[in-house]
Length: 267
Image (cartoon, rainbow, N blue to C red; front, side, top):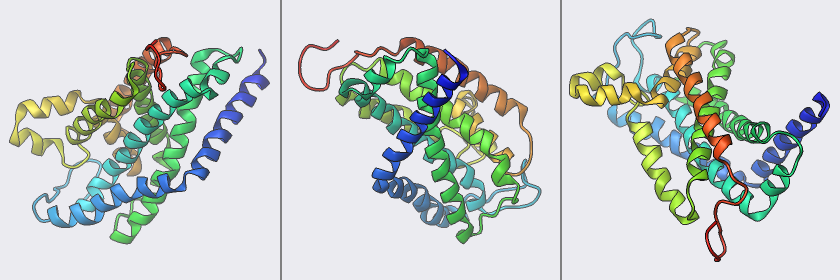
């Protein structure tokens, strides 16, 4: 196989994902409604209760909306990644993933490219959200919009690999949504997305350590520091390591015939 073959495959998968996204524009709107409600309604109600002191990467006192904006960017990627994993299960059973996996290209390359395609769509939604967040006073540095891009892509790959790993071991597709709830909400609420970890440490030290071991916490911190033009090697290192481990397990465990959607005996 030549480099051109890999490139054509990469472009084809990316194009297909964007075409699917264009045909499902209501999904785009619904993905923005959730974080915007948190940013406008939730932040307004808790602004006075959860005041934010001067903590890195911020150089001065900030509003609560400014603090939770990176966490809501992670929320968009988190929910989209889980939905993308579900779509991969459907694709696997209804034909398109089977056709894709018949390609002579290595399966890990095909799956990682698929995850990257879904991640790029999520990143596009994040940037639309950040533009809308300007209306409520969330104004990161101009260069921060570009500096945060690697952290957003890395986060999308990590969460996409997690969703794919879970999907590979779920034999009954109707159980997928329930399992996702046990993954999405603990990951989101037990992280630094909505409140600084020092506040969690004051309230409950054992919850603080759970948040520290949550990889989503470090992904959010990578996004937050990058958005404000600062480097957080610990956050990037942990997020990268978790991404590699999850991707290895997900690509190794993915089987073309793992579930059945329409009756029959489970594979």
